[in-house]
Length: 169
Image 1 (cartoon, one colour):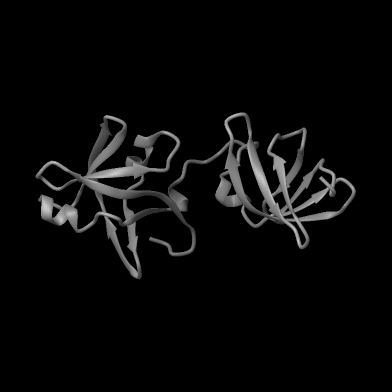
Image 2 (cartoon, rainbow, N blue to C red):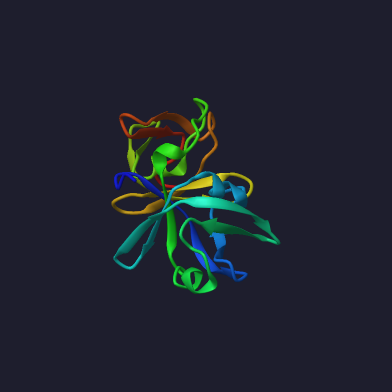
């Protein structure tokens, strides 16, 4: 798996049964989507290992999965607490007006007056709309991610975004 662009998609949170199945805490929008992205790169502290997902399913409010080479509860217990990453290239393609959050982090944001507000540091999901957290040299801005209203232009290759947002707000 490429070390260049990896996406943190979940964590192994426990064991399920005696045959090596694992409880997975999924960060994907649809919890079970994490099962579509095999292989997984597992990371804990400085250790990494690549594992193949054999099968899995929704179980109550979570996800359970069976990994190749994990045949019993003892093997499964050794993986509790490992973070799950996937190769970014495995993500499905998007429509022209859609973006993965990972692609927006680090983009320079300027307003319609040409004032550079800073770089996108993170994105918050609020329910109503996502909010860009833009870190400038002197202050932080929380800008609603509403395309064609506050977000006017995104140029991923140039790593720039233009917004309709007052620099003092």
